[in-house]
Structures are given as structure tokens and as C-alpha cells.
Image (tube, rainbow, N blue to C red; front, top):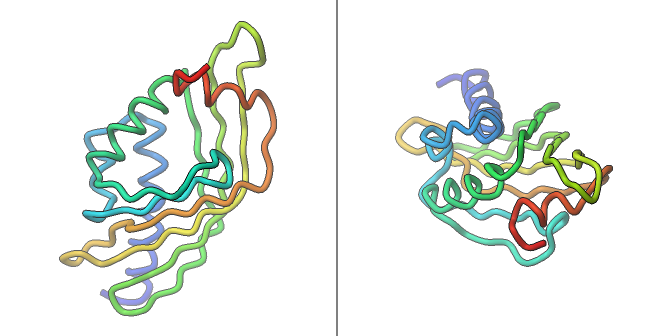
Length: 151
């Protein structure tokens, strides 16, 4: 694969993660991940990074994102660094979450950056890690707790 083809395939894998999650194409979501994936969303949600299988990610995201009326994750401004069968893709994100809430507004929006760590598995680029660095948020933050069933 050429350097340009690799870069496009890497960007495509990162884009598909957001697309499949937002479109609730859960049967396809697991395809973009390596066998073991480290997820770090601590900048927004606290806690500690976790390492999950693709099936576990699909299960967790189906429950959480599926509780929203709609989500829309824009992933853009990709900067790809290639090193053999490994790559890092830094990208900006803007994520909008919509959920009716009788005690607050229906929208919560976040922005910041993602760092995707990818590996080439049998010729296909797979996401092996995601670090989300939220730098701003607006709206009803309680929607995440409501969607998670913790409120």
C-alpha cells in the first residue's frame, strides 16, 4: 500500500468509528477496532482508561449512545504519522448529543481532539487506542448521566 493509500485508510477507519456510532450501525462498529483497544475518555468523564475488546466497546456504546435521541460526532483535520504497521492519527472533534430532559436543555456539545493509535492487521488499519482530550463543552452536561442511567 502506498503512503497516500495508508493515510486515506487510516482516516477512513477513524471516520467510520464516528459514523457507525452515530448511525447505530453496531454490527459494523466492531470492524474498526483491533482485538484489544485502550479507551481514554477521562478528560470528559473522569475515571481511568480502560482496555476492551471490540464486542465490549459495542456493548457499552450501544447502551450509552443508544440512550440518546441522536448523536453527531464530527472528526476532522486529521494529521497522520506512519511508522511501518503502526500509525497515530490526531484529529479535532465536535460531538453533539441530544436527549429530551424535563429538567434541562436537550443538547450537550463537546469539542477537542482525539488521538487514535492504529495498527495494520492483515493489511487493514484498525484502531487500537483512542484518547479524547475535551477542551470545551456547552449545554446540559447532565445528559450523559441521564443516558448512562446514573441520574
